[in-house]
Image (cartoon, rainbow, N blue to C red; front, side, top):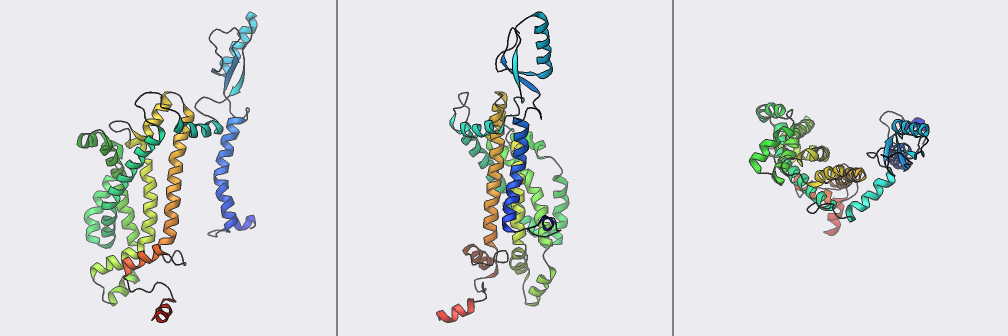
Length: 349
């Protein structure tokens, strides 16, 4: 495909080009990171001491600002002392990619520094539980309420103004209150996730339901559909693909509240691991933990996207058990799923 076609408005690219561009999306940031880490003249603002010479306060392996190192070299030369030597390096808070890659392995295999500290996989499991329960509770209430708001103007007028008011309140502001109500362990953290996603969820779901074509409702009413059927058999199936995508986006939103939620009460989860490693100045482990959060989120989103492409008939023309289940769940068991289904029934008869 020519470069000109890559920049056509609202024009898709081929499968091979899509794969290369996806790879490029990750390769470019990695290339910039590598350049900053490995090329000395781009950004190496400190000097790593190799030989301290006769400068009393320098130690081998110490990171010293370039200006301080140059000043000490000049002072030692003027005094006739053995000169220190070193090479340009990054600050300790910017580890190179290979150091972070090594940390991704050692974080799972190295024992915690202090007794009572958790391994990385234990911290991750705690964080995943917090996200899971917070999002499940939020969705169990927020999705039905959002559907009702999108379906009935009376419910919308009596609910959305208050929801719109509360959603501007930062979820961390409720931290002290949640600790007072639920204690200091997992419950207040789950509550912060719920507060951070629920109010946004109601408004997003309601807006998605309102986008359903009014002609579908009119056609259903012409066929004698009742109010409950209009909601359950028309609005929900018609908006289901977009609702599914909304939940995917809101799940990522829930992850953004995790770091704040986990410092409420007793610090726990991946946040505790990050804070502890930063305290020990193991910034390679800090970057590794942050990358793991991104990796978990990316894998989860791609798995949900894979399932979503197979759940909805109008998204995927191929037969699918997931699709069969969802279509018959909302439209009834007598719905013809495929054009050739009547012929199949006749043959089997």
